[in-house]
Amino acid sequence: MQRALIVTADDFGLSREVNEAVEAGHVKGVLTCASLVVAGAGAEDAMRRARALPNLGVGLHLAMLDAPSAAPAAEIGDLIDPATGALAARPFVNGVRIALTRRGREQARREMRAQFEGFRRSGLPLDHVDGHWHFHQHPTLTGLLIEMAADYGVKAVRAPNEPVMASWRAAGRKGLAGRAATAAFHAPLWNSLRTRLKRAGIGVNDWFFGLNDGGHMDAAQMLRTIANLPPGVSEIGLHPASSHPPAPHAPPSHWKLADELAGLMHPEVIAAAKGVRLGRFSDLVAA
Image (cartoon, rainbow, N blue to C red):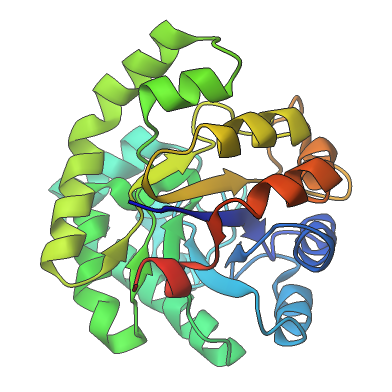
């Protein structure tokens, strides 16, 4: 089986710094996709840039945690942090409410639809859907996503299933126990997500890299990852930025976002990517 690769920047639209990195990484490097936070402070700027980049596969970064809401906060109060007025950064509490209460589920449905409508208003083709903090793996949210797929033209969704041994080799043979523990914990979610998406006729990648090494996908890590890609469609997920975005909703302060941008544009990475089939979700997953 041929090795195919999607290279995605998350948090597009969250800030100007991220938007600058997406544009540079695509024009000057190997970035093929970006995932848009439609209610982010930089969303309008991101949409403007994306309209001038027709080969960039723009998807919806479904942000249900630690992000501005697309629906009015008063309509989704169970999901909102009253101190910030934004979607709360509490995956366990919000996850339980969405799973076990009708009100939580309906509020999640309202917010998801508002985000899809926001993307539709951009006029951009929808390349894929993924989740901020990968929260779209939540079984109830997966069900709501599948429910809305036909209405919004969802053709492909990310599965963040990182292969343990390939990931370990790509990281310079570091952290095997932690990678195995992460896989053991998340495997039921990954398997359920992929099975349900395939049953619904929605495309999904085979592998994902960037779960264990988020914020540290620099040139060296990118080169090792490309060298260790397994057969099938792999995605490398990154969070590049021209400089660290301001709070709120900024990535962890120890993440090396500018190094990730530099890695996307590194000459050796560009050369290595020529050895695989590089494309967008819409190019690779559908095929």
